[in-house]
Length: 114
Image (tube, rainbow, N blue to C red; front, side, top):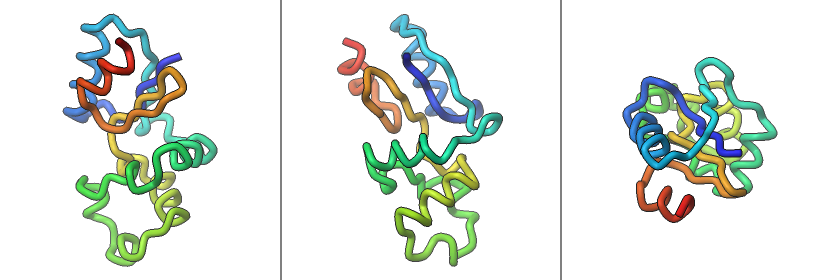
C-alpha cells in the first residue's frame, strides 16, 4: 500500500500528486489537518529517517513557535512538537514498498516506482 502524508494546501504536495497520477501510481492520501498523525507512526518514521529529516524548520508553523520550543530540540521534544502541530512535518511523506521518502524529488520517486 502506498500512502502519501501531508496537507492539501501545499505546493510540494501538489507536485507529488501530479507525479503519482501521471505515473499511474495508486495511493491513499492522509491529511494531517483532518486526521493528525499518531505517535506510533511518527516514532516509526523517526527510527527510519531521524527526527532531523522530518522536522521542517523552514516552514511558517515552525518559525511562529516560541523560542523556548525552538531551542535545544531533542528527539523527544521534536516528536511532541510534530504531534501537536503536524504542519511542521516536512512534506510530503511517502510510505511505499517498505520505504519512507521525505520531501518530493522526481528522481527519488522514479527510482522507487521504476
